[in-house]
Image (cartoon, helix red, strand yellow):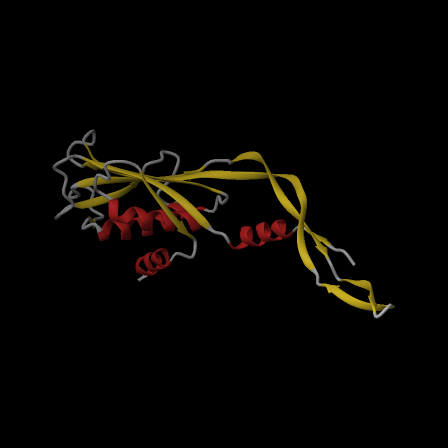
Length: 230
């Protein structure tokens, strides 16, 4: 009995369910003389359309404050006494859909047959016959490839933290931008992930764009969330 199976298609399906790798791009820059030491700040929305009482802004701001605290910055409610204003913005686009074409190998089970081999031999003038049976075990054999296509939607998510002097709001002290292009538009999953990876670079100069691979179950991300919740 022969059975055709698209093994690679099954592998792709299973790996697609378990694969959660997310690629992050971050870029940090600052003024050469900037230092977070003994600096206090007031956190504000960098998006004019986002209000301070927006529930998402409140949730993400708590995480942002924790990240800022790890750099030495101290939050204050007194706007007049703050050394700097930190503008926090985030968002996700509506997504881009593309059709991806790929091929999968087609495997077929072969074997499972019994071959009968008959041999004749002449001995002492007499013909002698012998019969041998040979079993061919089952095995998988590549018999071709099948082309398929699927639609893939990716979403560009981002966050930006920008510090400006409270005395001169036109004076930019530092800024960090984090982006990820993934199959998820769930900011409640992505913002903690992006902030945890951005935290070591806040107020610093990365010198270039930094690319980081992570996942939703990254232990560092969970530790970051736990720290922010304490």
